[in-house]
Length: 216
Ligand SMILES: [Zn+2]
Ligand SMILES: [Zn+2]
Picture 1 (tube, rainbow, N blue to C red):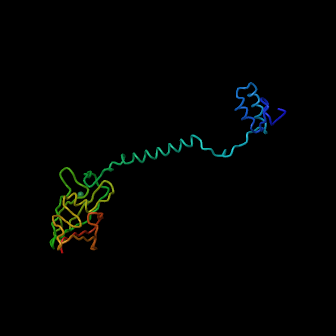
Picture 2: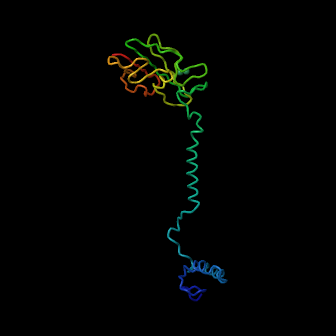
Picture 3: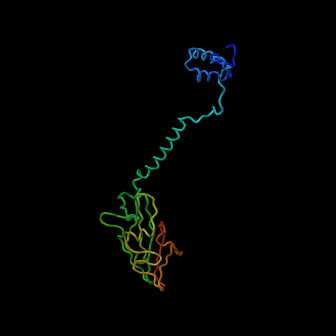
């Protein structure tokens, strides 16, 4: 190795720092290559120059790890609804008999042309099924409010529309029960004494006082 900037095998000019790579690339099978490499490795001058970006290289296992994490996250996202026993729970579902996790009581009164309508008890209750929105007792003979029970195994919003759905009675901005807007009478609504225009989309809340009026 008298001439450090030439290859000792083929004698072409090769920078010292590139010689090890040159031997690997050009003379991988040459008889002298193994012993040459052995010696070059112990010599500082022949140490291969660090390539730019050597500090951090995107390696195959980085990509694999990120892909695996994304896959697990996507899998958990897809499976989560299947693990939720109440994923398809709706106002038409039957509530289980154990104490409900969510239990609130709004109050409802319906006035038809000045007379309180007797909202019955037992709405949403049959011998085999109790819907999450239901009544037990009929309307109070003094206040004419019926206590609506909202009972569900999960905390979930129910609407005034859900109550009428379970009851099987029409309710919209132009109709309540069998009474439709006719130019003289119309359907209005108050919640806790204040006018409210949400009608069926009103979300039921505990101790809410809802009054639906059909009249002039
Ligand atoms: Zn209740
Ligand atoms: Zn109940």
